[in-house]
Image (cartoon, rainbow, N blue to C red; front, top):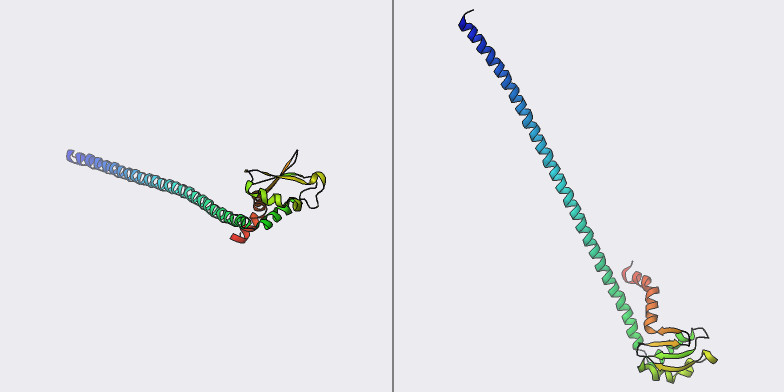
Length: 195
């Protein structure tokens, strides 16, 4: 074999080996690029998923807050409507004639137990109305169960408070409306709001 041929054989072998190494390097580079792209795609997908989850959480929180505020607004509107009904009741009661007014309070007083006598505390503007009808209010009451006097009390809005030696019974219009509100508010809400 000639020197030239040996040289060409060595060069060809080196070229083949370099080509194989280059092909392997290109494959490895392609694999690394593919893995890098896949990793970037995974990271991007995870980032998108995390952003969606954050957005959904924030959206849900905001929706819950808005629903809560809406419920409060609806309840406030309902309470305002119910309060208006009871205001009208109170206005209607205050528009009664003296006889109707004292008669109504008299019915409340007549439902008290017989031992619930004593003085009637009323608003100063109502002293004359109740004093003039005291005997009427005492009808059917005997002895210590009678109402012995009518006393002015500016703390009483309308109606009366029966005050004995050891007790006081609230028969005011305000108290009666409060009791009515406590017992009738559910039925009233059904009527007003079809609830």
